[in-house]
Length: 287
Image 1: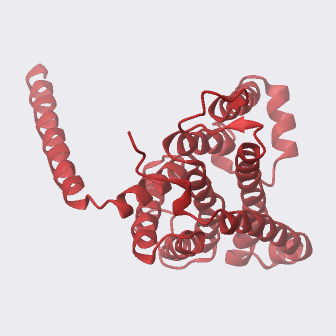
Image 2 (image 1 turned 90 degrees about the vertical axis):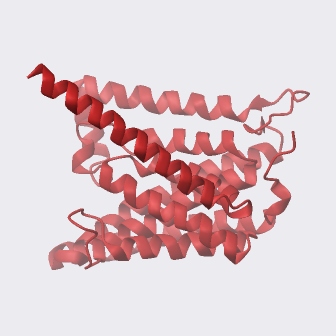
Image 3 (image 1 turned 45 degrees about the horizontal axis):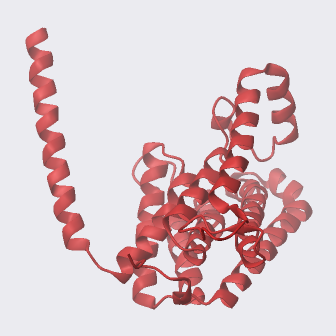
């Protein structure tokens, strides 16, 4: 069966430039934080929050670009095979297995620090500038970042998987920084409208620069931004959600099926309401 997506649909050279650019942006954020971070802390308010995110998202971008680099140049130099439709005649390691191994290492570290107090103490002391308060008693973002990247690798050819990971590495960074400095809340959540706008604009630029048409890019990035917003509100980790939403958003943009999706959403909602009514009536009878 012919794949819906092909690496030739994206400009590989430009994709490499985006990876380089991600490293540069991450490095610049880190330098800005090192130079002005203490002054920002004294200032407090939104400025302090933004500079906290500068440090976090600098490593977020650099880490994401390291994953992209390992996958892209690993395939290019035949150290690993693509996780999507791997070549059976190659002796190189399956890219899916390689990144699953990396995920296991990450999960073991996270499990160790959540169950062994001494490891937790070392972990929080070492990464105190990067770990959010809510992650003190749960897995950190990296535990979802690697599986999210792996899901994108399994779902699409390497160029599209890398674009999805860049959406997370760079687009999510824009969302977090925009939220830290933003003013307009999304309902009662901590998310700010400025963060969603930043995510959408940055992801759209990445998609268009990589070779997608503006129409496909807008559709794909709308899915990424909306999904990232919903994940934040309902408690899903966007490190897992964004890469696969990026890949699926591109597929939907290239082969529109919004009508069918809307119909299926309506059917799903109807089934959910019916189940809720059954559960509610059963509970009432038990009382």
